[in-house]
Length: 423
Ligand SMILES: Cc1ncc(COP(=O)(O)O)c(C=O)c1O
Image (cartoon, rainbow, N blue to C red; front, top):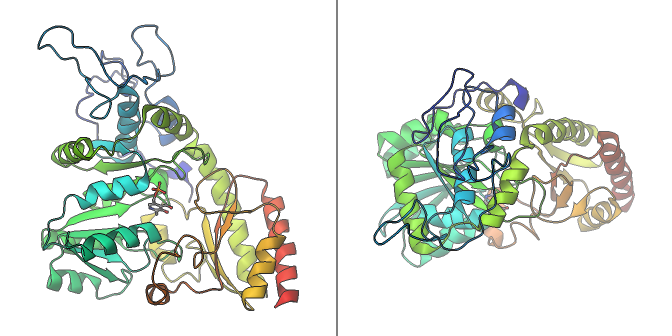
């Protein structure tokens, strides 16, 4: 399946309610708020997000409003915006587009993915238990562990693909269940609906980090999530030139609480970054098509190559949660992981032989990347925590870009041959 097959089931965002016969909004609204296009395919909604929202000049593209402050209309007569930390039209345009795509009621755009995760952590109190996956993004693992050590809340890391997870949730009654699926870097797929059901039975909040798939390939709110977190640094911006994040809330009350904390803590994103991210978002469906075609071809090569001990990609039939991924996702994503045969020398030779993959952290950009989680993205985890999560020295993670497929496959082949000779 690809992003093309996605059915638009998104609810309307309640503050924008004037829809015309063609499904396109024409209503009067404050400058900079999103001009949503409802009941349309996501490719239409991303391309047209916030268009024609400028009432001063009739600009087709939304203006970039950099001003940190806004005048009052008169004494005790504030306008919609007063100060950019608390609200900004350009940032709101991006927030509305993300809430629309995720099927949420509200969204807060933050300065980074970690700022979005920090924001969600504010919802926890000292005795609350946070359940997180044992192989979540290393930065999330570090934040949860450090805040728990300071007594901000308690944390338990579990393999969320385990069959007994719902039973564990019912017995331990966490306040918040953090899901990251597919997980980073081992691409374990967690059943969002099943986990959310158990979590809601005990009154827990369900938060899904949807960074790996974006709302085009997975809609956690439709599966029961209360909040969806993004590092928009990744595929949503898509060009590796902005660091940003977002939290989308399923309910208006959830959005209000997040807005309060984002303003209080000063975690909100910059207008320029929001503008760039909205621009990147417009081509997300196009980029996904290329990412996924390339990722499928790379996964197939790695799965059959003798220099590779294990290829990991939810699109491969041998992936343990392949059927769940088929059911839960509208595509398999652009991250592929592999364990090479041989020791450190084979890994080093392989990485140094690649020409079309940059040795760098991050993912979701137009460029292909290779990373070594044990020494890069997950280096901040303790060696024991890495072992528990299955992250060893032979593991590599590939973020597949939009380059030509044959160039990527050919480059990997030549690097694998060299690695095999070095092993
Ligand atoms: C799944 C996931 N969540 C969150 C983050 C943190 O995002 P940022 O780097 O934008 O702070 C990352 C970063 O790599 C990530 O991979």
